[in-house]
Structures are given as C-alpha cells and as structure tokens.
Image (cartoon, rainbow, N blue to C red; front, side):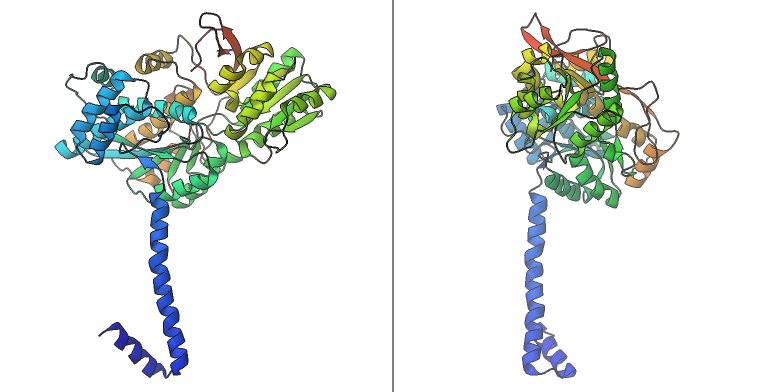
Length: 497
C-alpha cells in the first residue's frame, strides 16, 4: 500500500474534515522533513570534532615534515606498514614530536590487527592543541611514552627511530595486545569540550579518556562522561570543585588546596604573609579555587587587593600600584591560558613584590618573556612534580625525547599507566564499568612517577599527609643565557622545557 493510500484510509476512518485533515498531514510531513534536516546537522557536529589516530595532525600551524605528511596519507588509506616507515623517517629528523610517536604506535597496532589478528585496546587523549599548543605537546609526551612502552618498549621504538632500516619487533602487552590512542582537540573551550565528550562516549571501542587539561574543560566534559559511564582521568586539573565530582572522573594532580598550603608555608617562612594581593580570573573554576584556598589560609587576614586579569580595562601597572598602595608585600598570580599575557605584564611591573604562582604560571612564555623580572622578584610556583637529575623517569624520558620534560608530561604518563594497570587487572573483561570499579576499589594502586596513585570511590586521588606540591623558582641559567624553573629546596639547575 502506498503512503498516499495509507493517509486516505486514515482520514476516511477518522472522519476528519477535509481542511483539518490537510493541515494534519502537512504537519506530519513537516516533522518528517525536519527530522531529515536535524540528523545531518547532528552528524555534522560530530564530524567537526577534531580527532585523529594518524590521518591528520592536531597542530596545523606547526612545521610538518614531508615524511609525516606521507605517513598521514598512508594511514588514511589503511596502508599501515607504509605509514610506519614514513613516521619512523619523520621522527628520525624530529624525535621530540609526541604526536608522530602516537601515530607511529597507532600504525603498528593497526598493522598487527590486520596481519596477525592482534587485539587493540583503545583510549583517547583530549588536548588544547588550538589554544595552548606547547601544553598540548607536553601532555602528549607522557601518553606517547606510556603507549610506546606498552606496544614495543622504549628501546625498540628508539632503535626504530634511530635506524629506519631496523626490523621493528613489537610484541605488545597483556598477552599480545596493542594500545591505540585517539587524539582529540578540545581547543581549551568548555563548549568544545562538551562536544568532544558527546563524541567520545559514542565511540564504544574507546574504554577511557585522558583529559581534560584545565578544570573548566574537565568539569564541562565530566558531566557527560559521568552520565554515560565513561572513565576520564585528568592529569592536570586541580580545582577543588572537582573533589567528589564524579566516580567516573579521576584526578592525578593534587588539588589547589595542597598548592595553596605549600605557597602559604613558603610565605610564612619569609615573614611575608601579612599582606598579600592577588591577580586572578574571576568566575574561572581553577583560578577562583586556588585564590579561595589561599585566602582561607590567610584568615583572619584577607587578601588586601584583587586584580581581575580578565577585566576589559586591565592594566598591569595599575594592578601593582594599587596593591602597593594597600601595603602588599606579595602577589599571588593565578592566570588562565587566555590571561597569561596579562599575568606576564604583572611580573614585568612587580617592582619588589614577592611573586607566587599556581601551576598555570609554569609556562615557557613566562621564562622567555619575563624571565629576568621573574627571577628578580623570586617568582615561586607550586606544581605537582619537577624533574630531578637523579630521577629514573627523568633520565629515561630525556633520553627518549632528546629534550627535558616537565610536570604535565609526568602526570599524563601517570594517567596512561594508571589506565594500563587497571586494564591489566580486568582479566580480559575490558568494559568501561569494570574499569571504573577497579580504579575506585580499595586495593588498587599504581607506583607512579608522581608517587603512589590510589583513588577513593569518587575519583579523588588519596594523598598522604607528607605529600605536598613541589615549589619551583625562576632562576638564571648562566651557561645558556636563559631563565628556568628550579626546585626551590634543592637549587639544582635544569633546562626549562
């Protein structure tokens, strides 16, 4: 029976007036047409999510070698062995490219799947590629290093990069399985992070997410991960709002409470905690969190003067002058990516104020653009971890990347290793819900680079009383004529990444 005959039969039986029947049918057909329009719109939104296992780069503004371009073309055409060859050649020229290391590993995993029917375990990592490319690369290095260890071993991957004619020998882990990492760009935008989360929860083969970078992104996406029961491990989000936020959102870094405690104790030792000003971003979850935690420690005193880094009429010079008019002795800096330039302006104009900073101040732009002023005012920053010459992880990572690494690489590595350990304890049952239960169980722990990692039932990392944030300070490096972050307690010199 045709659709037209069906409608005639319905009208006859319902005894609808002709005009009303016509209107009724028009409405039904309209909704049918709307449905045809809405579905492509939704699919287009999904298609607009910037993600890749190797078909395209997340860093289009960066320099891309011809070999990497060819490798991306080959993996897109599913010629994985050829992709492996091109990615190896690209890394031979530029070893410190974590995205290409992940593309290489993904090509290896896919080749093993096609040629030997090996099982692939899939995770994703969300990065702020458009917005904070250097931070994104720091995060990717930790994930890429853990993936390389899982699939082939660092020694084998290093040899494959150094000698592009070497016969690559990768056996995988967990009884011959291989790890694939999908890279997704959330642009460090809350709305984009939500779209990323909606996309990832629908990718049923992806068992866990590493991300997001900042607390606002993790909060925005975390609600969707929680609702859809997908594990996300943020290596870098620190806002206290994330405490007890979701049993599917786990945090590697210590919260802003521990960072505030370390900075406050430092000021107490200097006798400079009487009058403190702050430059922060109003209504930003991370910036408000550290500011509030620090202010709580000042009680019964309060912060003598606030500067809003996101104010439309912000003036770094006015910020410092008004703080000094209130007899401030120190200034706490808590910028976001978008307001880091304003914070650097405050450093440039500090004029004798002791400077403190949250982990967002640990940025190459600070030492490049205001290194001398930061050193003169003893800029001291609280971060979760800092490289040490005697650290085995630091030595291994430095050799693998042919460059120094920093705290975001260490916490991202720990995030990936935490997922791998949980997969190991899954006994072959690689479900999202099983992964969450293992991570939050009382007997689960991982010996990470940043210390022992264990969580409570709501995803909060359980720190010991002796655990605290690491304090680093900007100091000159006479050998290279640059400025760098140095561990405060030890005064050891390392080159800033």
